[in-house]
Image 1 (cartoon, rainbow, N blue to C red):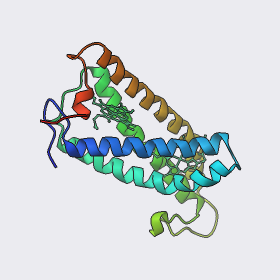
Image 2 (image 1 turned 180 degrees about the horizontal axis):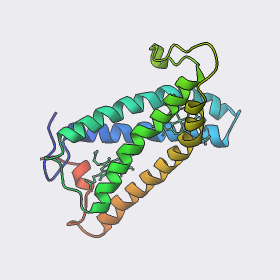
Image 3 (image 1 turned 135 degrees about the vertical axis):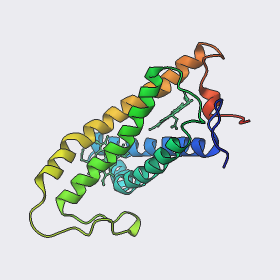
Length: 178
Ligand code: HEM
Ligand code: HEM
């Protein structure tokens, strides 16, 4: 796997970026089905994937964060403070949104077995209210905010591209690598 360099992201960074972009899109389709099409065949089809896929996204985001830290001196410099802050915020949300849901899942006392893996065996007795309340308060809201951030991020890439080749960041993440 080639590493990053100051002009372009390397193949592992690109793989993680685009794999997560596709999976997160699927995740938002399932969230939308739950939000807007409750009790429909569409919800029945995609909602069961929400928890296991959300867990897989958390694992991928953690690996990606570790790789980003390992590559931080090699990868292309952010074009502005806003871009740098934007990328850091995306990472914070990629980790916080699924963690809040997992906290609520644990606090509910219900078992959680994504892909047949017993991550939480569940427990008898009363649920842990603060965990359930925090997750319920923030998971969905911050999830939708993450979608807004992603739309803003993709829009900024387009805006930079239209300003001309010297501002274009698209070739950093896509196309021939050197
Ligand atoms: C990156 C990962 C994730 C994203 C982007 C995400 C996004 C969302 C969004 C936007 C909603 C709001 C839907 C609505 O308004 O009806 C939602 C709801 C929900 N999510 Fe996630 N989610 C993720 C991971 C997870 C995980 C790991 C779990 C469970 C272990 C989970 C469980 C739930 C549940 C039970 C709901 C319905 C209750 C609520 O609205 O809070 N999610 N998710
Ligand atoms: C259509 C969707 C997307 C497009 C066109 C796009 C495009 C790009 C481009 C061109 C870069 C390089 C920018 C630079 O170095 O200045 C980049 C970096 C980045 N993108 Fe995206 N992106 C998309 C979706 C996403 C999604 C869904 C996420 C996260 C949830 C994301 C998170 C990031 C992050 C954190 C970086 C910094 C490099 C890294 O650590 O991977 N992007 N993106």
